[in-house]
Image (cartoon, rainbow, N blue to C red):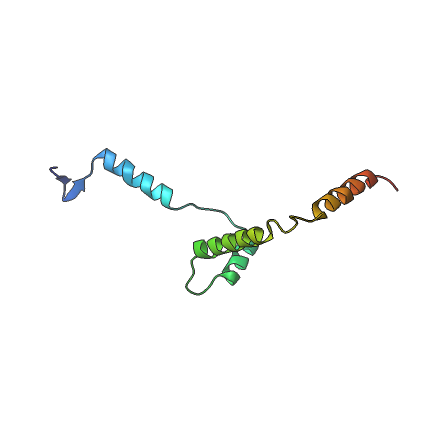
Length: 96
């Protein structure tokens, strides 16, 4: 491919620019945070961690807690008892 240049600045084909833009757009996202949320994340962030690192760590920890609790009621009647209590609570709503 022959490179064209104007005043020493290379002219890049439009296809190349589009590909570069797509790659950049897929690699990062911007999210808005309240000041309090930013401060909380900053407090949880390790010295060598990025904000992406800390958020990824928090998500992974939450998933681990959920996975650890999965199946705890298996083989017990706890789920049925919880349903019964919920039904009783729903029936009692609005009664004084």
